[in-house]
Length: 127
Image 1 (cartoon, rainbow, N blue to C red):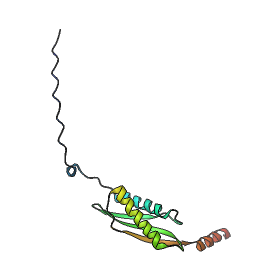
Image 2: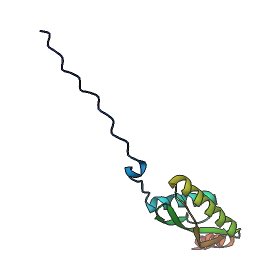
Image 3: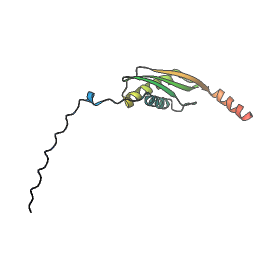
Image 4: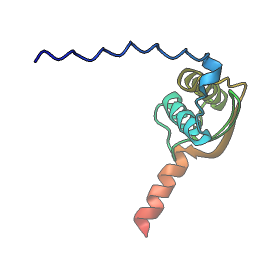
């Protein structure tokens, strides 16, 4: 009545670890990097007067080429605002996506002045 217990299987050896280069790669889509860039531009501008910034990105290996389209208030220091956007966009992409950003091109699509905003408001009320 005492039957012999089956022998336990020997422990398996862990498979050898593959080198990091042999495991594969993570690819971040261009549109994801573009969303990071647009959000970073919004952060740099605080409260932009017009439409939110829009970014397009081309990624080749770990290098991102970025173009940001902005609407800015006028009169203001446009060069300083563009420089702040460039710094913030490059910093955030390097932090979040671990990509190099050699340049950030800025397109200012519209300038909004206090005078034109007030005039546009009057035109709407008169109609």
